[in-house]
Image (cartoon, rainbow, N blue to C red; front, top):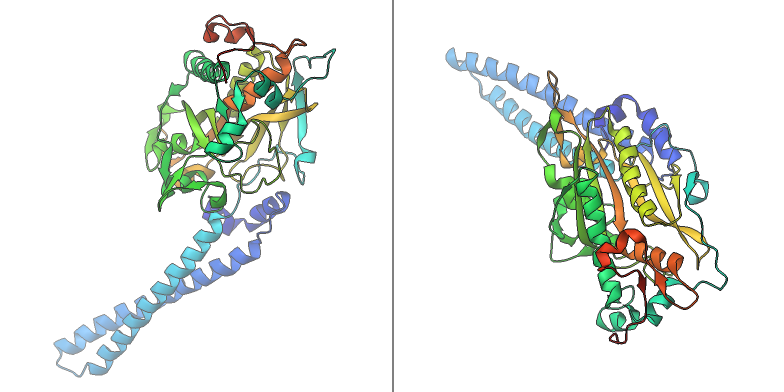
Length: 427
């Protein structure tokens, strides 16, 4: 949520941001709603002034034994009108807050202007794209041939966009999770957390999934949802709290199942591990001082880059343009890994600085030494999703004989296994 005072004082700032984001929202709608709210407040204040003066006069008349019935009736009418206007004020306030809940974050000045993903800006490429003397296979075909990925049985169990991982694939998923967590906690300074995978409406609202993106969520009974990412519970760990300045930056990481309905992705990535309803992801979340948050974004992005480089996966880093950024982000870097079978880079990590956007919604503040409490800045990033990482490892490491060479960094986590070979035990 944006600062209401900023919008009231500098509406042109939001108008420019909405235009840059190609949003259908209009600042004129806000001005109309806010003017109505202000009008009611001003009228209430004037009526209360009259009521206070009338009450004093009523008291004087009573003390002097004079007729006060007409004035008493007038005061009752004033009270009824004030109550009516207070109800209208609350309704107007609710309309303003509802509108604000649907307003995206203001892009940072360093974010390139653009209408969609075609205008994102590539910053760098890392690693060497592999060359093959055979036609590389997509990961879903490799996984099926090696009997580690079973999409057919998953479809019978749950429907489309699920997978059953068996044997080496299940172990690889676990190995990646442990590798990511070890690097983040032992080297990068994150605190590991095991949060709930089910959260309430307030928690989803705090990070911006609600109310705007409810159709993308898996809803349980009333008021409870499966998390789409550990960003949701991790960011809300400090909801309605005041942190000390010396606590910043505060860094958390968690490996959780993630659940997404993918309501707006009909027909996209229907095969393989790229766009699943359920997947495992290691998430990074940082709470930062406002003066340091963009530096923290660079650090977090390097943490994700480090994982890809140690897994020997070629990737590129891009900065998203204004028209492609997420709802709550002020600036986002995407890391895209090379998938040989598709002959393209695909997103594997997204690292964002949400500045105070989420902190305002979740009421997360800190107390500077000698100053007033103010909102922290929150950041989140993928570090990394196991499914997409497995897809990249399989496609980049595939050999002509059908085996898959594993990155050296994973060999200790795979019990010394250096390559994936057919396993006769698997069905």
